[in-house]
Image (tube, rainbow, N blue to C red):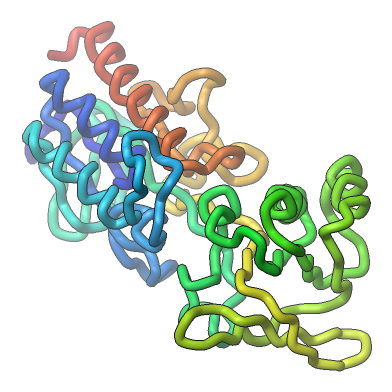
Length: 318
């Protein structure tokens, strides 16, 4: 079995940036870019940006760029420096001994170092119309897409800190924000609750849930909402529906192997990309539950590649 200096598990901004830096350091990286799986049929190589239409906050693209186009640029740049990319998932990862064993669906390698960039997936409502209007009014990232809903009415689904952060962010640019929450109290921290409840542009529908996202050829026009206590179903007019019920890090392969944070994300030594096993590094959303942006993912991908190279130098691996 061929031994590689660096094997990168996952793609997206983190994985491809790690590949670019590793390749330029002559580490000859191999990338398992991922794809649909039994646990997440929506997962595609390139990460969450592959289901994002317009990206206007990534530096270097003054007129914006689509998510798939941006990921195509990342991939081509990695390939330019002779990165080997396999469009498949890793199905088995043995980190118990060195070199590590990385087994994909059709390819497998031994690896001196491993960089994990498997990302995270947004939790969705799984209601009628949600898939149909994805990127045409349905989003899981206000920071990414809020700009497109200036002076419109939008809905935010959720009751935790993320939902309140999204609602307050959107209130700065939208005409109104309606928060729909399944309970009659918020789960968010006290300060976030106070900030949201006092915001005149945010209103709340308690004990309620979306049953269907509705729209037309132009996009979302609203949502059918059911009140659990009364049973009443009403239609809330809105041009955007922001789902903020959490994200799930893609850590199936690493549970009981690598140290996790309390929220399930991979633990890294603060200020680094180092995981709990020497020679294994993590970058992007799989270890970041705070920012979840393409640019921060790319930054940690750079960190991981540099730290992998330094680790090999320190241990006399050439």
